[in-house]
Image (cartoon, rainbow, N blue to C red):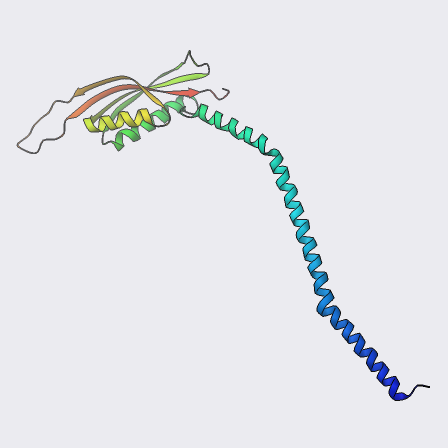
Length: 194
C-alpha cells in the first residue's frame, strides 16, 4: 500500500519533472527550433536571389550587345537636328540667337532657306539659315567657335564681314569696332526611318 506522504512526494516529483521539461523546452528547444526556421527562411531567400542573379548573368551578353547597339545608334544620331525641316530650322534659329546673344552681339535677321536632300547620305536633309548680325570682333570669334563646335553640328557655308562706319561724337572713349556679319549656316536632319 502506498502511504499518503509517498503519494504526495511522487506527485510533487512528477510535477517538478514536468516543470523542468517545460522549462527546458521553452529555454532551449523552442529557441533552437526558431533559429532553424529563421535559417531555413534565410536560405530560401538567398536561393531565390541566387536564381535571379543567375538569370541576369545569363542575359548579360544579350543586354551588353543591346547596349552597344543603342550606343552606336545614339552616336549615329548625335549632331543631327531633330524633327521636320521646319522644326530643324527653328532649332537652328534658337541656337544662333542664343549664341549671338551670349557673345554680346545683336541678331538683325534670320532667313530660313529651303531644305535640300543630301546626295551623299540618303535620308538626310540640309536645313539652312541666312543670318545677319552686328558684333565686336571678339564676339565674332566666340560665335563662330560656339556654332561649329557645339551640338547639333553646324557648318558655316558663307561668311561676309564688314566693318561698320564709325561715327565719333565729342572726345569720349572709343567704342569697340563693330562688324556687320552676314553668314549662311547649315545643320543636318536625319529622317526618322534611317
